[in-house]
Length: 424
Image 1: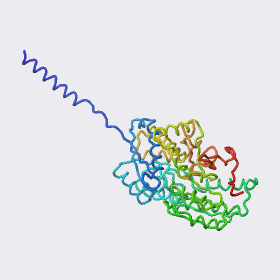
Image 2: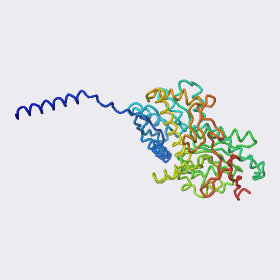
Image 3: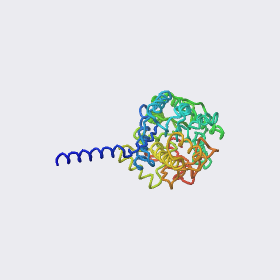
């Protein structure tokens, strides 16, 4: 009896093993690897930190799943250097196996990476590099460079004109009466800095300003006394420019006050990181900048949630826009999966070409956009988004005590342009 029982048990075990062997094996989990590009070390590491944290919050909200794909995010550090950026991106493609990239900060890096993504046919969505050189490169070969899949930030000339309009309106209204319209242009010595400087110089000269020259400096420069003294001796009443390294920009603004330069300061991007006021302090009073604001309840909730989670204050320009553009990418990926049944570089590129670039897929307030009312691309603006009220637009703000008051456009204006006491 015991022998028969042992035999029956053995047979049952064998049958069970055979059944298990014949049972269909679960399909391996599908994975979509996305490269997030930014300056995670170097002089702009704070921007990279805001990028990564904002994107993490966007993917957290969907549990890192798009359909039946698990999303993995790969960090691509440019170190604020185009050559290092291209090496890191190649590494992410070849060894990291990314299928697409998102976000980017520096213009010079964007220009360099356009070659990398074209070579590997990897769609990169929503780089922040704004320089007109990106537009020129795209227009030189639209097919080759179509893998640089839409800029987040429009080229400088489409935004810098707002400063000129703000100042000219104040002059016409008698709010500001400069003895002479003498200006100087400055900026970091990068594609972005020179592109902005060239744009605003032409716009100022078009309305009668005398521009004494353009001065560009290394990204990490913090010694500006000789330059500021020169401008003071030239009788400059306006300096206009941009930089991306927070410590450098803050040093320029503080030293301008120390040398007694009695001029308006257009500091495009001073507020791009959340820590800007700790660095610049009250020297930033009366400075003009173009920074989107936390205007909606949803935007303010994101700001508060971000600060609570990461223990740093986010900037609308860096963290806020990165959050929007990550969510826009998620919307595009969901559409690609629905349309083509899979997610890879080919389907993501195709959805970009067929839907994003034709204005059929947009990202707006109803989708959850927290910074601009609507992000939309059409053939007439590619690679830029549509710029204007109701779309992508930066208000001109004037700082007081670390807070920005909107002085342009009129539909959003909170105050007239304030004139510093030392300029009256």
